[in-house]
Image (cartoon, rainbow, N blue to C red; front, side, top):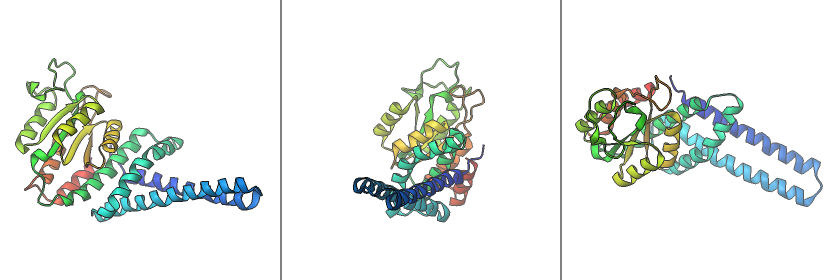
Length: 268
């Protein structure tokens, strides 16, 4: 399913507009409906707080849009963008439910927005990354459900029989000298990141785990790939290995062109 980054951005803009209407309503109450100094003071403080949040996330949303459209990293906007994503994401999720938009659809749109921000941000890695500065983080559900080998603690336990995508991905990380780990949840994923200290993560997971992982890892850049789930969630999932390789080629020294990377993003 093609993700649309404009869904997340559009919902964010609608939330800001509603907040501005609410501020206008508070102003109306302050100057027309109440003669109480205490009540008026409370209304003014509430309006000032909301205006402050609107200004903050408004510039953050503008920074996100500018970064995506111009495909350029703006260091002075990075903290504001991170703050906006962390602060605004739960609000947008709640707002989306009011319009009966599925969580997965919004989360997929968020991942798409994040990937384009990382695409712009990676310019600061002049000369490309070394393979061992990357981490490929995989969910346990990529492993064949009938496999008896435990690979979450040590992926070298994989016998590479080819019944799932793990073998292909191990081979890929060998060729690009990229670190690879399988995580069963956020705690193990954080442990892997703490041990390896990568400069960038390529993560494969479902929409929910990707969004929580991206926000949790911030400001460490994470490129997200939503897995395919032909048998439902958390069981025998798959991933397009060619998309993972396209990321590796672009991010490591001597990789392919920027246009190739951008084209890959559109397919995620």
